[in-house]
Image 1 (cartoon, one colour):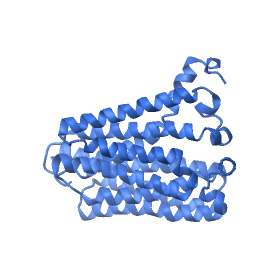
Image 2: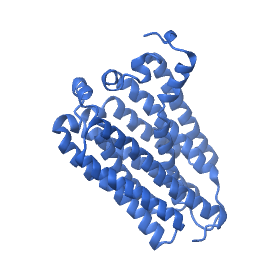
Image 3: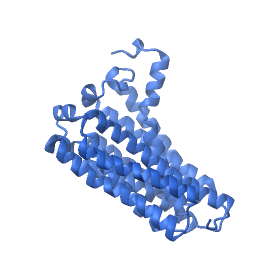
Length: 315
């Protein structure tokens, strides 16, 4: 289908849609969580490292989303025919060029971080490692089913490490909580990836993608996803109990909001055990993304406010 059949507005929106901006924002906030929660108390907060790390993480995620659509165009023709490539609003060639441009911008930001903070290429190296693993997932690992899901969990953990590493290299401050939460978030995202296979069984089976849903059916898939989602809930408890109660590093409203978001995650983890219909599975995996985003945002804003307004002292 020729792109000339679509309006300029439709084509422009397709170039925005293919980036999966919500995923990019979540990736950026995961990296920001690592930066901010590792930030040493008692010093003035400098937002520049966090901003640059967030932009780099968002761009790396966005280029992976583009390449994911290129790799999945045959499955998407069955599972998601409304996406830019199956509809023809973006050609495969244009998508390749677009992905390479976004990936180049990500490297450019990483290079600027290395130059500004004298990191000797470490930011570029970690960005390439993270982006490369995502791209490898798009074209190879995804077809391996669970092992592909696991690689996504590792990439999520890498985002937290990416942020924490920059704080450590710049300020010499290390904190274990962001890494632990990152590992639990990685587990939760493995669960989310497994759930994503439920509404896509037909297209994945046709394309030879050996997802857990294709191999074991809906009921067993829901149980396996539930187990991994418990990791996400564990991460919330670590952050809330250790950071908020034992260390007293959270304002009361942040604790309340964090508990509400955690309760929603528990509801979704239980809900998938009783309902594996495509619409509910799709809704669950979408809400989980927003749950993840909201929880990260609570902690990031709380810590920034404490550093900026209270000078890093505990509330």
